[in-house]
Length: 329
Figure 1 (cartoon, helix red, strand yellow):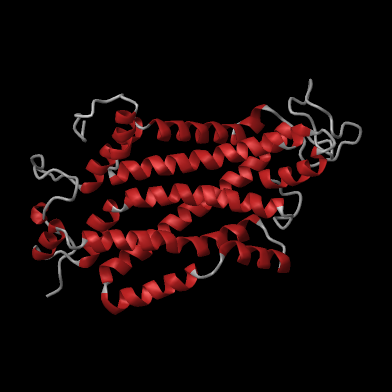
Figure 2 (tube, one colour):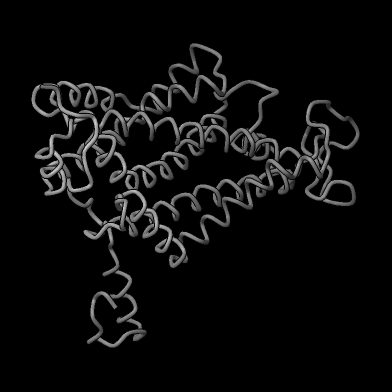
């Protein structure tokens, strides 16, 4: 007889959930874990600072052009390389284009690529790793060999080879980065699923007749969302960095496409002429966005893993906590 697609609440609590369910319902792992993550996020200064920087830069790039109108296509002769001043707060570049407006437009491309690769990588890796971990046996072995094969391909070198053979576009770069990045997430999710499928709540669900598909959707995926979010933040930062590196090397998407890496390339060529405003603004925002995403990722990783011992150790070292303070204080 085929296994039912649903299982009763008595199948057992999910990790992190309560064993006591309210009358007429059940507590799921998703709800409880989400509350714990939000509580940890609100108490993490690194996470709040990084998130605030990301939000401000996103507003700057996508809302800023609606308030500060500039012409980013037409070359304006006579005002090229103008220093910051009235009408052009960050000056103009070698084509007479406003640097502040170009900073906003370039940021749109960088953030669009970063979020697209981060979301696609997380979804593919989450599903692939969860299925591989739940299947086990020869199916798991074959799926992991595919992952190992993709991981053996050097991402940046492949991008350089493809860029030298074809004219890259933003969508092509997104596809290449996604194809070469999802195995990292898949391996992490598989490891989590391998550990979770031996837990008591999974065994109880199997005893109650739950199918593997129900366990996968009801328990495995919700309990690995924390790891998926962490990997997504790092994937976004790495993607933005990869696009900027390609553009800085001159093998990124051709004009009129622009991003922060292209602005750095054009600015470095004029840096020794004293045109500092063409280099430092894109460099600063690029460093800020990459560091912000990495700080959010590190903070979320600590929250998901429950690693607070390092924080307490630092507080004891600087005498912010007594040495006798409990580790869960």
